[in-house]
Image 1 (cartoon, helix red, strand yellow):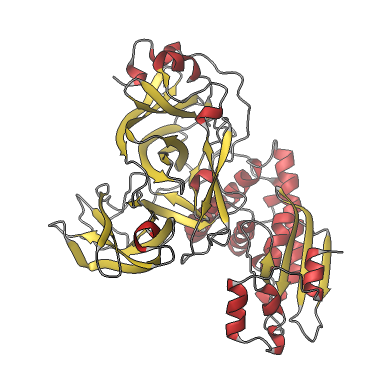
Image 2 (cartoon, one colour; image 1 turned 120 degrees about the vertical axis):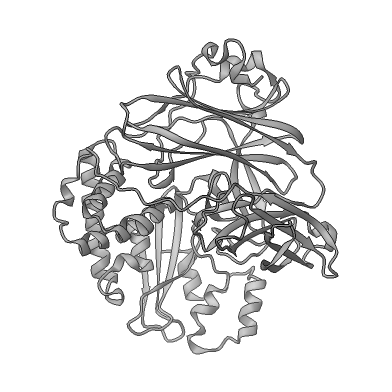
Length: 567
């Protein structure tokens, strides 16, 4: 019997009032509506090998990328391996407040993942859709991971959504948790309640394999992705990438390709660290064999953890519509199989017709009154990309701008600022301040982008972090390309950060970001050599050597002195 179905059930659970309130980071479109967890967090550290996509930090075996996991042993409740009676008093009290949404189409899934240390964890995904068909209400979402009569872990998330600030008449939402688990079988159970009404319940069973063996972790079907940033939800970050999953591993029948993310573990213990091995991946045919027309190969370098983010072509019949199967196989250079997996995905869905979206009753910001022409509104949407989350960027570029609905775009901008403010007046004031920044970057940096300075890298940094505290300009050096160094005492949630821009083409060209010590920005160990390569004194081989063997000493060259000692 599931925990939610036992006598007394959730009705006996009491309110946990000691948990700290935290403001939601609500997304739109295909976006998360979840708050960060209120439990104590540890930081797990990845040491990742090189791969083919751009990470938030340079993924060498010396550079850590981190994500947060909840430490069950560290909580005040001592959650690890408690029995059901002791658990009863802990599972209630965090309420998910929503606007006037009618929730439907709940989808749940969990992926078995692993840290380089061997510790397994479940990435638990919950997705649903909502609209404005019902009155305002409250929801409670509870996720429990259990084995027999023991609770191995649980999560409750508070979600605050500002009333009367709708984005559309239909929204898709996503919530992701990570829970560490021991080896062996376990069950994940979901329960969603509105007061005493059960909106959704489901359960899935998993078996966690023991650590210490070469392994292919559960692959993720990726709906959209971008480079991670300081605004990313840590539970959605993998190897420096902000990955939004297609919950349930769904692939639509009209998709031309499917994006996949998977991690390979302990390949180095078979072929040797830094040795090459081969990954074969593709769709299975009707007989379960490799479909040669839809199979790809990738040569990889063995490390404790090898992340792979690739795209597989699809057709109307491949993979199979009713039972799509993804085949993965790691092989040595001699062709010996190291480890293989066949992963059954969800039956493929028919293409979903686009839904008409009607403007809701949200108040429009008065500062938007001057935006009446479609071109001006579209341009303003693009200007928001600098501040938007990955999911908001996807909504702007893939939904709002293509549709060209002025009313809907203005409504979205209003919601964008209202979600970042405590009142309509504050939201309008912040939007006006943003417009002033946009006007400034367009005037200062827009000459190389037809007047749209917000689309330059300098404009992007200025819009995100405001005016730098100090600026060093060197536009007429003979030994170096023209460059500027911006120094911020505080950039977002980070202190003492620097950005170095340069103009490699010198004439009528936008300044580009060459190097920064800001997490998530371009970090280039070879920046000084590239900056002085205007004189062509550096051979390609020397430049590569600098990248592989960063300097340990200070060169005392002026750009380096100015970068590390801004003034």
